[in-house]
Length: 199
Image 1 (cartoon, rainbow, N blue to C red):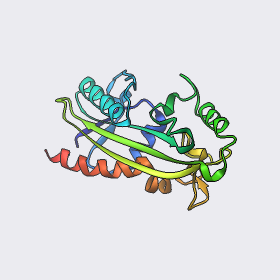
Image 2: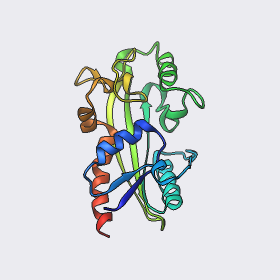
Image 3: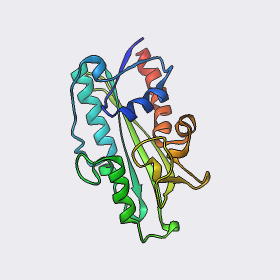
Image 4: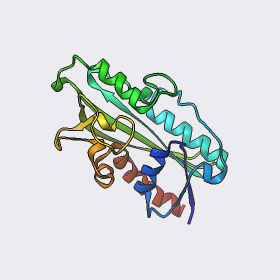
Protein backbone atom coordinates (compact mmCIF):
# COMPACT_ATOMS: atom_id res chain seq x y z
CA UNK A 1 0.00 0.00 0.00
CA UNK A 2 1.47 3.43 -0.89
CA UNK A 3 2.18 5.75 2.04
CA UNK A 4 0.53 9.15 2.38
CA UNK A 5 2.23 11.70 4.64
CA UNK A 6 -0.22 13.86 6.61
CA UNK A 7 1.46 17.26 6.59
CA UNK A 8 0.53 18.40 10.10
CA UNK A 9 1.74 18.15 13.69
CA UNK A 10 -1.74 18.95 15.06
CA UNK A 11 -2.99 15.81 16.88
CA UNK A 12 -6.67 16.77 16.48
CA UNK A 13 -6.24 17.24 12.75
CA UNK A 14 -4.30 13.96 12.38
CA UNK A 15 -7.09 12.02 14.13
CA UNK A 16 -9.76 13.65 11.95
CA UNK A 17 -7.85 13.14 8.68
CA UNK A 18 -7.14 9.50 9.56
CA UNK A 19 -10.88 8.92 10.11
CA UNK A 20 -11.81 10.72 6.90
CA UNK A 21 -9.23 8.86 4.80
CA UNK A 22 -9.55 5.37 6.25
CA UNK A 23 -9.62 2.57 3.66
CA UNK A 24 -8.73 5.03 0.88
CA UNK A 25 -6.05 2.69 -0.48
CA UNK A 26 -3.18 4.60 1.18
CA UNK A 27 -1.46 4.06 4.52
CA UNK A 28 -1.54 7.41 6.35
CA UNK A 29 1.66 8.30 8.23
CA UNK A 30 2.53 11.34 10.36
CA UNK A 31 5.75 13.35 10.25
CA UNK A 32 6.76 11.68 13.56
CA UNK A 33 6.16 8.21 12.01
CA UNK A 34 8.79 8.93 9.35
CA UNK A 35 11.20 10.84 11.62
CA UNK A 36 10.40 14.22 10.11
CA UNK A 37 10.63 17.34 12.27
CA UNK A 38 9.24 20.14 10.13
CA UNK A 39 7.09 23.20 10.80
CA UNK A 40 5.94 25.16 7.74
CA UNK A 41 5.02 28.82 8.25
CA UNK A 42 1.50 29.57 7.00
CA UNK A 43 2.31 32.94 5.44
CA UNK A 44 0.08 32.60 2.36
CA UNK A 45 -2.81 34.94 1.66
CA UNK A 46 -5.26 32.10 0.98
CA UNK A 47 -6.08 28.60 2.27
CA UNK A 48 -5.03 27.18 -1.09
CA UNK A 49 -1.63 28.87 -0.93
CA UNK A 50 -0.98 27.63 2.62
CA UNK A 51 -2.17 24.06 1.96
CA UNK A 52 -0.10 23.86 -1.25
CA UNK A 53 3.00 25.19 0.47
CA UNK A 54 2.69 22.68 3.34
CA UNK A 55 1.99 19.71 1.05
CA UNK A 56 4.96 20.49 -1.22
CA UNK A 57 7.44 21.09 1.60
CA UNK A 58 6.45 17.97 3.55
CA UNK A 59 6.42 15.88 0.37
CA UNK A 60 9.91 17.00 -0.63
CA UNK A 61 11.30 16.63 2.90
CA UNK A 62 9.73 13.18 3.43
CA UNK A 63 10.07 11.82 -0.11
CA UNK A 64 6.40 10.77 -0.07
CA UNK A 65 3.09 11.96 -1.47
CA UNK A 66 1.82 14.42 1.17
CA UNK A 67 -1.63 15.75 2.03
CA UNK A 68 -2.07 19.10 3.77
CA UNK A 69 -5.09 21.14 4.63
CA UNK A 70 -5.58 24.73 5.55
CA UNK A 71 -8.89 25.78 6.93
CA UNK A 72 -10.48 28.63 8.75
CA UNK A 73 -13.58 30.29 10.07
CA UNK A 74 -15.08 33.20 8.12
CA UNK A 75 -17.48 35.39 10.10
CA UNK A 76 -19.63 37.75 8.00
CA UNK A 77 -19.98 40.39 10.75
CA UNK A 78 -16.16 40.54 10.93
CA UNK A 79 -15.73 40.94 7.15
CA UNK A 80 -14.60 37.32 6.79
CA UNK A 81 -12.18 37.32 9.70
CA UNK A 82 -10.43 35.39 11.21
CA UNK A 83 -10.13 33.55 7.85
CA UNK A 84 -6.62 32.37 6.98
CA UNK A 85 -5.44 33.70 10.35
CA UNK A 86 -7.88 31.50 12.32
CA UNK A 87 -5.12 29.50 14.05
CA UNK A 88 -3.21 32.66 15.01
CA UNK A 89 -6.25 34.83 15.72
CA UNK A 90 -5.58 35.65 19.37
CA UNK A 91 -1.81 35.83 18.82
CA UNK A 92 0.92 33.18 18.59
CA UNK A 93 0.88 30.09 20.86
CA UNK A 94 -2.67 30.72 22.07
CA UNK A 95 -5.05 27.89 23.02
CA UNK A 96 -8.30 27.06 21.21
CA UNK A 97 -10.20 28.39 24.24
CA UNK A 98 -8.38 31.75 24.05
CA UNK A 99 -9.14 32.09 20.33
CA UNK A 100 -12.81 31.27 20.92
CA UNK A 101 -12.93 33.82 23.75
CA UNK A 102 -11.49 36.57 21.54
CA UNK A 103 -14.05 35.77 18.83
CA UNK A 104 -16.97 35.86 21.27
CA UNK A 105 -15.78 39.19 22.70
CA UNK A 106 -15.62 40.70 19.20
CA UNK A 107 -19.17 39.49 18.50
CA UNK A 108 -20.64 40.40 21.90
CA UNK A 109 -23.00 43.09 20.52
CA UNK A 110 -23.84 41.33 17.24
CA UNK A 111 -27.43 39.97 17.16
CA UNK A 112 -27.99 36.26 16.44
CA UNK A 113 -29.30 36.85 12.92
CA UNK A 114 -26.07 38.65 11.95
CA UNK A 115 -23.71 35.99 13.39
CA UNK A 116 -23.57 33.99 10.14
CA UNK A 117 -20.30 32.26 9.36
CA UNK A 118 -18.72 29.38 7.48
CA UNK A 119 -15.91 26.95 7.92
CA UNK A 120 -13.84 26.57 4.76
CA UNK A 121 -11.11 23.99 4.08
CA UNK A 122 -8.71 23.43 1.19
CA UNK A 123 -6.82 20.14 0.91
CA UNK A 124 -3.67 19.94 -1.22
CA UNK A 125 -1.99 16.72 -2.34
CA UNK A 126 1.59 16.95 -3.61
CA UNK A 127 4.38 14.62 -4.66
CA UNK A 128 8.15 15.11 -4.38
CA UNK A 129 8.34 16.08 -8.09
CA UNK A 130 6.18 19.15 -7.45
CA UNK A 131 2.87 17.87 -8.82
CA UNK A 132 0.02 19.30 -6.76
CA UNK A 133 -3.79 19.28 -6.82
CA UNK A 134 -6.27 20.99 -4.50
CA UNK A 135 -9.92 20.49 -3.49
CA UNK A 136 -12.22 22.59 -1.29
CA UNK A 137 -15.10 22.13 1.14
CA UNK A 138 -17.30 24.50 3.16
CA UNK A 139 -20.13 24.39 5.68
CA UNK A 140 -22.46 27.27 6.63
CA UNK A 141 -23.51 28.07 10.19
CA UNK A 142 -23.73 30.72 12.90
CA UNK A 143 -21.60 31.68 15.88
CA UNK A 144 -23.17 30.67 19.20
CA UNK A 145 -23.04 32.98 22.22
CA UNK A 146 -21.08 30.50 24.36
CA UNK A 147 -19.10 27.29 23.73
CA UNK A 148 -21.06 24.01 23.82
CA UNK A 149 -19.92 20.42 23.43
CA UNK A 150 -16.85 18.34 24.18
CA UNK A 151 -15.98 16.97 20.72
CA UNK A 152 -13.90 18.49 17.95
CA UNK A 153 -11.31 21.23 18.32
CA UNK A 154 -10.66 24.82 17.27
CA UNK A 155 -13.87 26.84 16.86
CA UNK A 156 -16.15 23.75 16.81
CA UNK A 157 -17.74 24.56 20.24
CA UNK A 158 -19.13 27.91 18.98
CA UNK A 159 -20.01 26.93 15.40
CA UNK A 160 -23.76 26.38 15.45
CA UNK A 161 -25.50 24.34 12.77
CA UNK A 162 -28.93 26.07 12.68
CA UNK A 163 -30.67 23.11 11.00
CA UNK A 164 -29.61 20.86 13.88
CA UNK A 165 -29.60 23.31 16.80
CA UNK A 166 -26.21 21.90 17.83
CA UNK A 167 -22.64 23.10 17.65
CA UNK A 168 -20.12 21.03 15.71
CA UNK A 169 -18.54 20.06 19.07
CA UNK A 170 -21.85 18.46 20.14
CA UNK A 171 -21.87 16.05 17.19
CA UNK A 172 -20.49 12.52 17.30
CA UNK A 173 -17.40 12.16 15.08
CA UNK A 174 -19.20 10.29 12.28
CA UNK A 175 -21.90 12.99 12.00
CA UNK A 176 -19.29 15.74 12.01
CA UNK A 177 -17.31 13.97 9.29
CA UNK A 178 -20.43 13.68 7.12
CA UNK A 179 -21.10 17.43 7.05
CA UNK A 180 -17.91 19.28 7.99
CA UNK A 181 -15.85 21.44 5.64
CA UNK A 182 -12.92 19.05 6.06
CA UNK A 183 -15.24 16.07 5.49
CA UNK A 184 -16.49 17.55 2.20
CA UNK A 185 -12.93 18.33 1.05
CA UNK A 186 -11.66 14.90 2.19
CA UNK A 187 -14.26 13.06 0.09
CA UNK A 188 -13.03 14.98 -2.96
CA UNK A 189 -9.41 14.24 -1.91
CA UNK A 190 -10.20 10.50 -1.70
CA UNK A 191 -11.27 10.58 -5.35
CA UNK A 192 -7.97 12.26 -6.27
CA UNK A 193 -5.96 9.74 -4.23
CA UNK A 194 -7.64 6.89 -6.08
CA UNK A 195 -6.29 8.32 -9.35
CA UNK A 196 -2.85 9.12 -7.88
CA UNK A 197 -2.60 5.58 -6.49
CA UNK A 198 -2.88 4.18 -10.01
CA UNK A 199 -0.52 6.61 -11.75
